[in-house]
Image 1: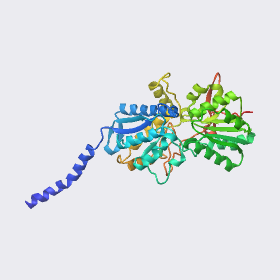
Image 2: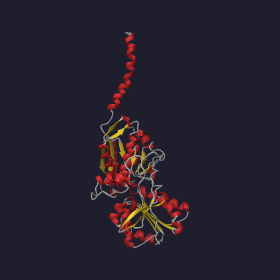
Image 3: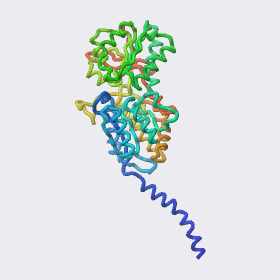
Image 4: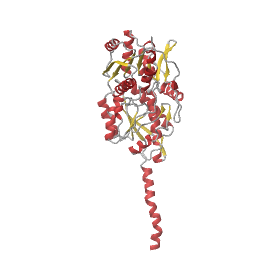
Length: 417
C-alpha cells in the first residue's frame, strides 16, 4: 500500500499545475473590453470624433483578423469597444470614466481626445489604479513620478511642442529682422502649457522680445478686440495657440481686420488642415506657420500601416462627403490601437501594472505612421515630432509644407515683408 502511495505522489504533484492551466484557460475573457469616451458635440467635437473614428477603424480591422493576440492567454481575442458620449463636458466625462471602470469593468481605458477632457480622467484612473491610454492629452501636469497609471500615445507632451517654433524664430527669423513676439493663448492644459514653454524658449535665447502675452478663455469666439490690442504693440511675430474653434475664429477675424504680421502661427492650420480649409478658406490660412502633423508627413514604420496605406483604408471606411475630416486626430486613435495591440502581445497578464510594463517596454522600439514612440519615466511622449510647417499657395488653393528643421523640410519658409 505504501508503495502504491509513493507512486501516486508524482502524479499528485502535477495536479496544481494542471489545475492552474485549466484555471488560466477558463479566465480568458470572451472579449477584451476597451472603454473610451467621445464628444459628438460641443467645443471638442472637431478633435474628438476623428480620434473615435480612427479607433473604430483599428477595432474593425483587428476583429476582422480574428481579434487581438493576447500573450497572457496565448490566443487571439475579439475586441469590444464600449464608448459613451461626453458632449465635450468635463463633468459628464468624469461620471462616464467612473462608469467604464466601476460598472462596465473594462480591461483597458482610453481617454477622450485633448487635454481638457483627459484632465478629469487622470485622477480617476490613478485612484482606481487603472492604466490610462492617454491619446492626445498633452498637459505637462498629467505626468508625475507618483502616477504610473498613464502614458501619452500620439502627441508629444506640450512642453516640447513649441521647440521648433522658438528655434525657427531664434535661429532664422531673428536674423531677418523679426524681433518682437506676441503670444495669445487659450487657458487650458494643452495651449497654456505650450504658451509657457514657448515663453521660456524665447526668454532663454534672448533674441526676441515678448511685447504681448495674454491668456483668454477657451470658449472665446471673437478675437476682433484682441487682434486690435495685439496690433497696437507692433509685433513682428504672433503665435495664437488655441483649439480648432479658437483658430477658426481668430483667422476669420484676422482676415476681416486686414492686419498682417511677418510671422503668424496657428496650431490647427496644420493639425486639422482640411477642417480649417473648409471653415476659413485658403486666403485666411495662406502663409500661416503651423505644426506638421503625421497626416501630412510620411514616417518610416516598423509596425502597422504607413501613411499611404492608412489613408486608403480611411477613405474606404469614411468616403468623402461622410462628414469626417482627415487630419492629425484621424491618426491618433489608430495609433493608440497599435500601442494597445503591441502591449497585449507582450503583457504577461491583464493586470494594470503588467499593461504599464508592456507599454513602457515599447518605448524607443515602436515606429508607426505617427512617428517614433518614446516615453519618459513619467509616461510623457517625447518621441513624436512636431516640425514647423507653413501653409503656402498652391494654385487656387493652399498646401502644407514642412519648412523647419532642415531634416524634415520639403519646402522653404517665407516671412512676410
